[in-house]
Amino acid sequence: RKEVEQDPGPFNVPEGATVAFNCTYSNSASQSFFWYRQDCRKEPKLLMSVYSSGNEDGRFTAQLNRASQYISLLIRDSKLSDSATYLCVVNSYQLIWGAGTKLIIKP
Amino acid sequence: DVKVTQSSRYLVKRTGEKVFLECVQDMDHENMFWYRQDPGLGLRLIYFSYDVKMKEKGDIPEGYSVSREKKERFSLILESASTNQTSMYLCASTGASPNTEAFFGQGTRLTVV
Image (cartoon, rainbow over all chains, first blue to last red):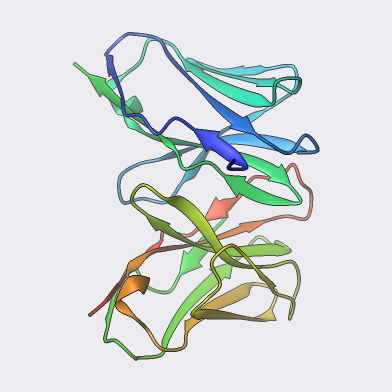
């Protein structure tokens, strides 16, 4: 089993829809969690950190479920510009990256 | 504006050449990482460093070495480049706290012919 797993997608979603994806992790001692966004041929950039109580940034909501060992990302009212690959990252001694979920928003 | 800078965006090298990829960060970060990213495989850790002159192997260190002589600089070396090392190489850095985010360089797309 991989340490951090994501559904690779692609998720094809109409503009304006809500989309959610999860990321599971295997190390229960993991300390911090992040979602990154990566555009084609660009480097990953931080989208948001994930806090135990859940956190929201505009149309984006991130949640952590320690009992079930997963984090989630919810995007509301999706825009064409949200099309990207979304990477989850788990910090347990070192950064462990998921392989990413590809999201395609269609007009 | 914080920065991680990689020396080249694109490189083309011949099989057997020695290749140096340089990464410099200006955030006084303790930790630095080298990854390669290939389609469908995500980010794979080659080497990382927690301090000057310290290095640890990642998941795929074979065919690579690293050097960290100064805190701000982390170099990746391909001793004898091979075609299967054609990839996107990404450098990243983080602070000492486990809650700090990773900052990436813009990536180097290396082609070995």
